[in-house]
Image (cartoon, rainbow, N blue to C red; front, side, top):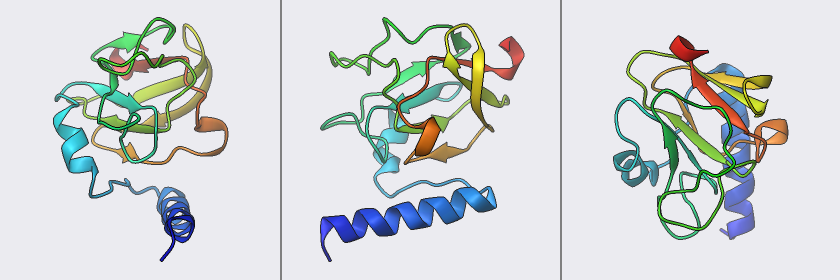
Length: 136
C-alpha cells in the first residue's frame, strides 16, 4: 500500500474517531509518550507525535500564554502556529487551546488522557496559547 493510501486511511480513521469523541494514539505514540511527562500537555510539529525526525515536543505544566519563543525540545522549530499532534498527559485537568495569545479565540479543549495524532482543519498549525482548566 502506498504512503498516500496510508495517509488517506489514517485521516479517515482519525476523522471517524474524533467524530465519536474517542482518543487517537498511533503505535509510534508509545515512544512519544515517554517524552511527555505526567502532568504536562505536549504538542508536536508533525503528525503522530513527531517533530521532523524525533519525538521532540513543546510542553507545559500550567499554561503557555504565547507559544512564540517556545520550541519543540532541542530543535530550532518554533512552536507558535505549528502543532499538528497533541497529548494531554495532565494529572486531572482538561486543557484549552487557543488561536490567539493570552486565551483569545478558543480552538478546542482536550480532556486529560486524550490525544490527537493528526489535528486537521482550523485546529492544525493554529495554536498560540494553551491553559489547563485550573489556570484558565
